[in-house]
Amino acid sequence: MGSATEPPPLETTITAEHAKSVISRNDSPDIPFEQSINPYRGCGHGCVYCYARPAHSYVNLSPGLDFETKLFYKKNATQLLREELNRSSYVCRAITLGANTDPYQPIERDLKVTRSILEVLQEFRHPVSIITKSHLIERDIDILAAMARDYLAAVHVSVTTLDAGLKRILEPRAPAAAARLHAIRSLNAAGVPVGALVAPVIPAINDHEIEHILAAVAQAGARTAGYVMLRLPYEVKDLFREWLAEHHPLRAAHVMSLVNDLRGGRDNDPNFGSRMRGTGPLAEVVRRRFEVACRRLNLNTLRRMPLDTQRFRPLTPSAPQLDLGF
Image (cartoon, rainbow, N blue to C red; front, side, top):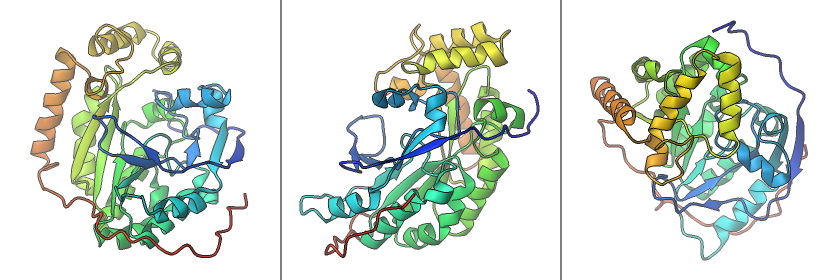
């Protein structure tokens, strides 16, 4: 697999965006949230499989290296969020952070856009769910623990592999598995409901790790777990094929054959329901393995209280908030 040493950082440009709105609405029946906020466009983690990569074409940039090195942040996110939450027509539904790019990618350490959003949500008593693969979330445990006491916060940490060498080439600038497991432990110890995602499951690459990953996250304190099968929309399929040719040339044809079997003979299946889990014999085997392992490890067995939307309180608009000055 090669060295586990982290690759050097890439030269990155960071651009402020003045968004027109900050809350995105979702009506996809196979996605378990109705509202989301994406503080960033592009992601410095550099995960080759990221399904959000094609979105960079909206700003005339490539889904490849540009997605990893030309990053954008919503400079007016907190101002817009306050305005939207204060509208008389607003209906409180839990907001998800991390539906596209990771809200705790490396530039969040300095920009703190995600933290500023959490501060507003806490002030409004608005429920939030977070998806991340970064231990940087531990920085914000002070906010998340306080919100969790009122059933206003939950976190899902993505763990793709326990193999440091595979992580280095698959998710080159994302935190190591040990750091993610530490984040699960810290969140659980602070009383924040925390689950794990095995995502994506890639046949003949990391699918053999499913039970090992589930055992590790359960030991760390995760109480729920889910998985997503590899998705290859638009240009991602070409990037993934290039990755296979470079890192697994002798296995590339076999991997893509298995992916095609999961996707009805295609590289990608965009249909609701099947796009997350795949179809066919291999998809059924993965489903059964996952369910058996979760039962053995007592994952997904306890019913958790849903995030509370009844505590939400609109606030009288205060003095204008200062933009982030980066």
